[in-house]
Length: 101
Image (tube, rainbow, N blue to C red; front, side, top):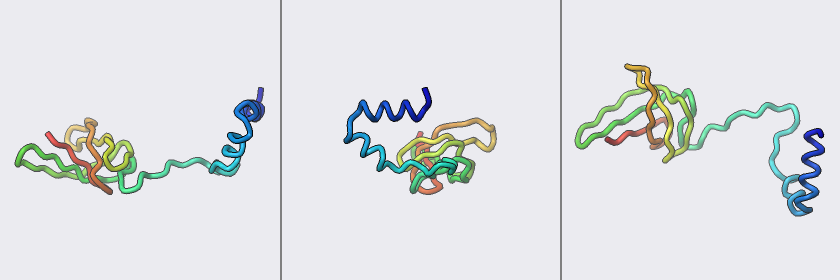
């Protein structure tokens, strides 16, 4: 069964209200590639970010690359520039992540 037939059958079974809602959804037009939308006020994958590490009164800040994307309050993976290891950090704003120890 083709994808279109399956979709038509699913819409028919769900009822007219669902069919109207699905028809009005913001699906991309045929032929356009889907691209990830960078998070607002967050961090995009591959973006240079400032990492701020705090432990008591001590504070360390350095710049590195984000290996995943996320919005404010979410955790993203960043790469330690010295060792190359990945570690999680919390997004604090555009281009800034924090780690509290």
